[in-house]
Length: 207
Image 1 (spheres, helix red, strand yellow):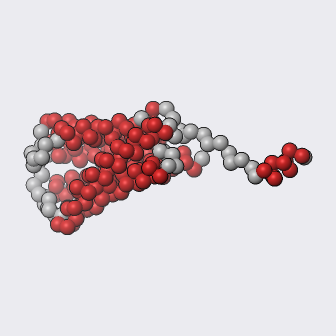
Image 2 (tube, rainbow, N blue to C red):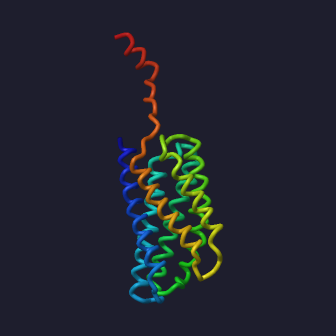
Image 3 (cartoon, rainbow, N blue to C red):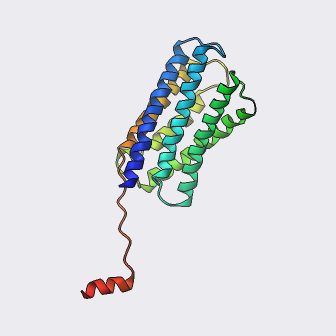
């Protein structure tokens, strides 16, 4: 089934994105990297690649119509992956600038963060209530979205990270891997076949 194949592709990329996030997290937590240094560039490349991979993962939820066919599901899930893509664009801006100031592309971070968080939460609620996904994968988008909201509460507006922020980031990145696994192994609600037109049905019955 094409829907399942799409889920497996996007899920695999999501798992890879989660691994990249963990590598970036290790570098940020345990390695000193001055702005513009080689280790800084490596960390930014990892983070930007992870952002792009996460955007593909969220695109997979929209691509497979995991929230059903309602307009609210389509719009929210589309805005969610666009938000992550904007974050990746901001990361590319940092790399191009070679500093923590990406210039005009800096607007991508607050805009992308807001879209990915709010639209992702709405889309996750729709996925959970719609039941288009079956089994435990149905709940993973909601768990991930809730963890992101909790992480935003834990994080403080400061340039200095704290053990709480590092812990919140670690949980979030591990959940990205689990969300990738969930989508990769997802099964969907079977849809009934389209009914044949009345005339065709009568003809078949008369045979």
